[in-house]
Image (cartoon, rainbow, N blue to C red; front, side, top):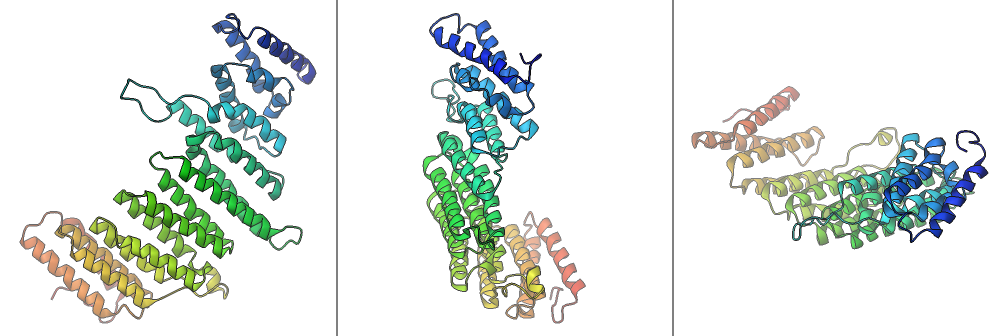
Length: 446
């Protein structure tokens, strides 16, 4: 039928209808479950998937899904895998609710079925097999193929997808980022149409941000595998950034507050804490002009406070001097063109951060690490001096340069190992300072 009458879908469906009836009639028969029969049924289900360019042609056959659903797990998994690969290979867009329903009915076997990886007693890995992880990657990529004809349709499709993906329980850690990425794109699309009277932007955007918040909260509370808190924090920060860019200050503040909550409750590894603080601080510095002064000051003070409490002194030092940038916003392109808000700047708070970082660096027991941190802080001083921060004067630059010279000389006299890299870094910094010709800055040792 496929070779001679490919356009006659009714002929093809008759074959599937017959196969469905026979499968149900012999469902308890050993003959149905032998290898040869199972291979024949698998080939039958694969035939329209491979023959038609559009997968939706095969899914439109009334008896395709019933025959598929009546098969054993290995057969259904093989067909679902081929369906997923076909969608990705052809980059088939999923544009309607009916198309999404058809795809999800096939992919459900990959979303929620299958066993955890097995091993000897006492040695079992509490995770998925490599094949299952790869399949979850396919599903995540398929989420990006959801393209509704308009924003409202897209939102409805994403809500339907979330319900289906939630049945994967711990597997949602693989698919939630894709769902959130699609939602963030939609948030920007809603914002672009804000000026149109036909679109209820306030209601639409509010529902979308609640949808994203619920998705992330569900992932955070239901999935307890390592790495999930870090992932959730990053996604909360991304949502906060987009909400701020779309001028939803209260919603953005809530997302950043949730990111801090995840940090406080679930991120205990010192390295992960440092990375989390850098992520939050970087995001806040990029959208500071979108917040009111009070809200922004609350968030950045929280970030700086957490940075100052990190376990390792080098991490603590770097977090504090990086936090100084939160009080010194940069000029954006739109500001230079006479638009946008004036960047938030507080030179005294910048200096306080740098001075605190110096005290932390000085407390490090390892001389080489301490000198390297001094040089990194010096680079920050130079940056703010360049930026004409009135609080950062030549007194502080000269004092720090002299301190580094002194520590290098003392370390060399005591035979301290590991000073070569900090020394080269310091020399490059001094060469830059000299090239800038700063008045009153002394770069030579006294």
